[in-house]
Length: 324
Image (cartoon, rainbow, N blue to C red; front, side, top):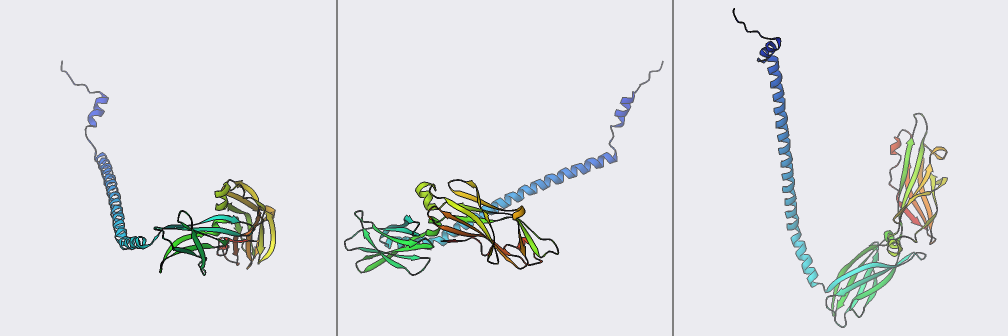
């Protein structure tokens, strides 16, 4: 009997799969090209990152070298000036504050490199760059010259030391101190909410709140961590064309030793309508325990019909503080 090879259906399918069709070949080729393109892009991106990093390092090195070279003459000049200046060190600081009189006591010191009999010293003091006034200084047992003077709360106080040794006068800048921002609280506030306008109407509607943050004076932070600083009768007044329109209490909603936050609610029934061409101003007012009255212009602006509501505030006149 003749023997025959019998092939099952599964073996027939396997045999048919030994050959790749053109469609399968094209798919594999496309996938290979995509993978290759992705790999090339990744390599190029990595090379670009390395080039940028290297360029930044080169630029920073060049800048550092350039700054060092440019500073050489200045450093030499400063070194010669310091070597020839007989004043070793100097300082200026606030040592006392009289809140009710609204004055601060400034102390200035200057230490000569070598003290000799007959040496004299005076400090020239000016406020906000104005005309300087002479303040005589005297030396203690430590041979350091000191002088004190009272200055008003406002402005920056600058001083220079003038030391006379024989017929020669030596001058050195002592520095400056910002009296106002040291002894008075710092205010920061603005309008928060919506300013809406409907087509055809001749007014915009303010619906939101005014939030004002009051930073504890630096001087009181040094003395007792701000424990003696308190505000009372806090409120926000709304002026339209410089006429008082509305007053709302400013509620303390958050505080710590560094800052106190107040909010006046102008939403709902307290919302404000500002007519075309009118100017509006939000002013925060409060009094501290020493009887000083603060008036802080938190926000100001005007609206003209046809402008976008977002252009109501220009902030040019805001952040202005006055005390009474």
